[in-house]
Length: 267
Image (cartoon, rainbow, N blue to C red; front, side):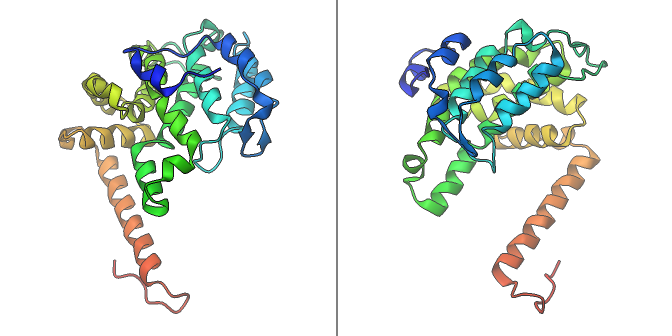
């Protein structure tokens, strides 16, 4: 069972259905995945609530890898994302872990892993990805990709499942929640919550060394009209310059490269 886009936006703070209801009412075997059908998904999803962190880690790999391939939203991705959102606050997703203190590493950080996956998936359906699709496929891109549209419609419900973890005691969980929240907040029903993320993004940039998460926080603040100069470190600037050079190189070869005898690009 899933909730429609209209139901997800009528309620100012929508929530996913109960995880057990989702598990029982979804015909997993009928859902397309990048590798066939999702008949094995329900078993893996149940194991995400196992008391053992190592069992949960294996289950996360089985469930999430099964619906993740080449930055594409598949039919099975949508109910899996809704289920993941529904279990985020379940005590089992942190049971047996020693990572509640920011200075203590957890071997199998289930909640962080689930939030990371929601973030990656949300970026695969964000406004930039849709704009790219429309440039290549025309304005009917979302009509041709109903699974992307379905995920985008559910962003409010997923966001409000993620939101409580923006202030989690575990710094890694907080950072993962922020990076997941950034693309979710693009939904028109969530615009007023954008300001809630600004201080969280600044906090991440003051504490985290994770390259991917720092880039996401910096990009978000810039997109929201904030000057990030004082928040950037030397490695942020170096990474940005490297990305720009790589983009210039790729553009040059796409427009001028003719093979092995082509002149080197002028940079």
